[in-house]
Length: 298
Image 1 (spheres, helix red, strand yellow):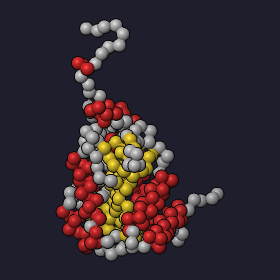
Image 2: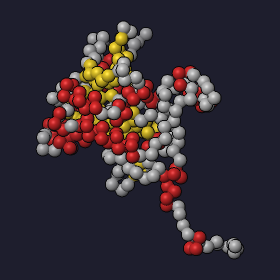
Image 3: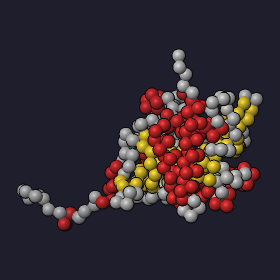
Image 4: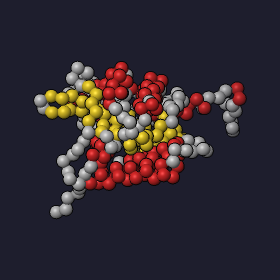
């Protein structure tokens, strides 16, 4: 019986992203870094669209909440396709995605440059989204299989391993690690609230940053840092060599991101957004300027 070589597949996918970066740099050089970066963003989004379940909508654009508040531009938005994946697209192609339809958001960078402070800037975006935009979190009333008076049938049926069913997941991916040094970001990671830091950061050729704990049972990583006991967990940068001779560290790091996104999505539950809340501000009129058509009304 044939066996699917998953490590080799992700090695090939990672190599394609690396080649796309090299090609973009050759074409645009250092004269147009933005254009080169845009091409890399498209390649990563293409990878996610192709690999993730077809029930998902992968795009770029802005989040919008029920009050009309809009997030900064995001490189990657992963939303539920079956309900309301996009509220509208303007003439210039800018897309606005209801925050209540969102599974994950991401930042894509071709190369890590410490002087650019990319991680700090992305954290500022995440902070703005989580503090200024309306997004009602849905608690899992059957979390860990514990049932009580508040447990509802939906959560028993879903069987999710998540404490919050519609948690917003954030990630960063760098195709090239550049001048990355974990010691130089330590202060940022230790002083920024856990909920505003990326759940996972991947530097394709270098390693990954995740929230983890080490015990006699081995290494345990946390998908949602703000839900863990801080005394046992801390931020860890680690390199994945892997066990397969057909794989590669770059492929393993890309696979780690894909794995965590899949776990997050399959354990999440997105309720269809209430479209009325998003559009109702337009539907206000005056009775004095209204007129019944046909028979008179009192």
